[in-house]
Image (cartoon, rainbow, N blue to C red; front, side, top):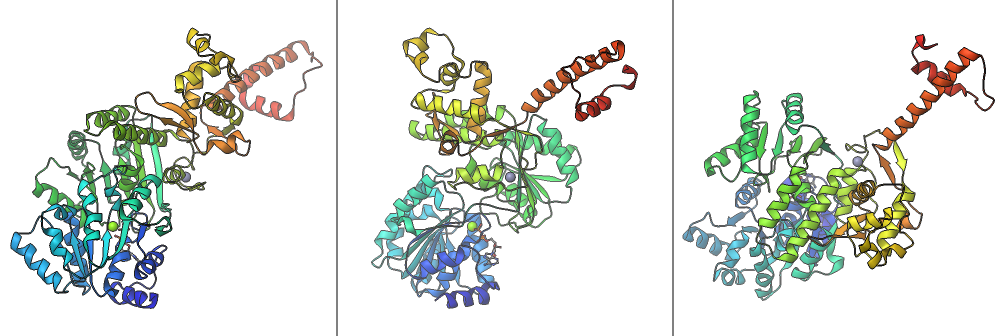
Amino acid sequence: MMDAALQALKQYFGYDRFRTGQDQIISRILNGQDTVGIMPTGGGKSLCYQIPALLFPGVTLVISPLISLMKDQVDALKDVGIQATFINSSLTFSETNERLSAAAQGIYKLVYIAPERLEVSGFVRILEHMHVSLVAIDEAHCISQWGHDFRPSYRAIPAMIDRFARRPAVVALTATATPRVTTDIRKLFGIEAEGVVATGFARDNLNFQVVRGQSADVFLLDYLRKNRDQPGIVYAATRKEVDRLYARLTQQGLAVGRYHAGLSEKERAASQEQFLYDDLTVLVATNAFGMGINKSNVRFVIHYNMPRNIEAYYQEAGRAGRDGEKSDCILLFAPQDIRLQKFFIDQSDMDETLKQAEYHKLEQMIGYCHTETCLQAYILRYFGERNPSGCGHCGNCLDTREKTDVTVNAQKVLSCVKRLRERYGKIMVAKVLAGASEQKLRSLHLDRLPTYGIMKEQTQKQIGEFIDFLTAEQYLVQQGGAYPVLALAERSLPVLKGEARVLKKGHIRAERLAVDDALFEVLKQVRKTLAQKEFVPPYIIFSDQSLREMSARLPATDH
Ligand code: ADP
Ligand code: MG
Ligand code: ZN
């Protein structure tokens, strides 16, 4: 069966072999086994249903959320001689009917349908009479309210599938699914756990970087000037911000376009077209731009603001480098981004449970902006991969600042969280560790815990910052919305057992320098004494190292 699949791949698409995951997904579909396919953006999800569609006797229905994308996909299929069409709200009533009756006669191999159509009364009943071999659900995470792009109309798909007299095969495809979303997709489509084929999320050609503590505008201008001819996208959080950046960059002599939902349809179409056909190298846009955009040579995606969660970030950043060439994914972080995203969540009409889930995701996004370890690995852990290795080329992997072993302090914090039974927030944990003498602690008997005061050499603030670090590094998680409590993450268990070390970069080095400076001060004094009194106290022995460093650092006149 896979021979026929390979032959179709060669004949219609001109490729010689399947990519990782494609063969497995396709052979499952051809065997009539329902499947959830998780592949990174650009991984080649479309072929996973297009090849079976060519081999199955009946028609393949493709549920796809984007009207603009459908036409492109259908045109591309027609170009290679595959009968395909689409049905969405851009068609008139009679056009829709014509296409549906042609489909019923078996003229098309693939019919793309917008999910909203399934909610139009009577529509599903027409589909029922077709010979449907396969239902493919693209961007399947849209069915889960735990995903980042929930679309209620996706909920109509399972019922539609159930109405066919002969149940078609089902494949649900997505690039962004946390374990929770994957489970949701499986349950809603009735797919067993073995039916999940995931190729891993790693995109090795992407260089992730977080820029903090410097002006985003300065960084952006500088980057765009240095990469003048490179196609790229700059995402900003609001329309207003897009307009402002567009004006600013244009004023600085950079040829950029803009895209957001506040522009007229004509303007948007023009921007998109120019960008796709390389007439415009850089596009400044809100997240309204990009879903399903198939431009392979995007060399960078810069987020001018922090997005609301990792799923959204990875999907947007993942639009870079679909051709496999090295590309940059840069996030410019500023603390006010957090306030903006919290505002968006508060303002939304989600119910309380969903809001809490969103807060939790936002925490993890903030953690990404503060992590000191591999950024790609951070994302992979978020999506449920165990022990991903460092990529070796993200901003953090390339950060050569010295690392200090902070395992013992980490163990202290983690065991305190454990002793507190994961019922208290950051401030309380820091108080217990610092050994604060407060009535509240005493009345809760927290001052009797074995971890009470075990970090009293540090201030509460320092301990709090260290807890932030452990949270950013995914050793701890914040649970609950408005009053989050600290809980242990899976990653913390090996640390508590003494099987893994925790390393910290950065300001520790400043402490080290301070020690160095103090030491040099002593040595300087000693040498002065030595010169004046020709007397060496017996307990001072100069090492070669200290003499060398001393002469390197002390001015020559200081003898
Ligand atoms: P996704 O939907 O997973 O983001 P697409 O289906 O749009 O990815 O495919 C991305 C690109 O990869 C397309 O240009 C496609 O032609 C190409 N591609 C897919 N499968 C193969 C393959 N087996 N060999 C070579 N190129 C492939
Ligand atoms: Mg796709
Ligand atoms: Zn890395």
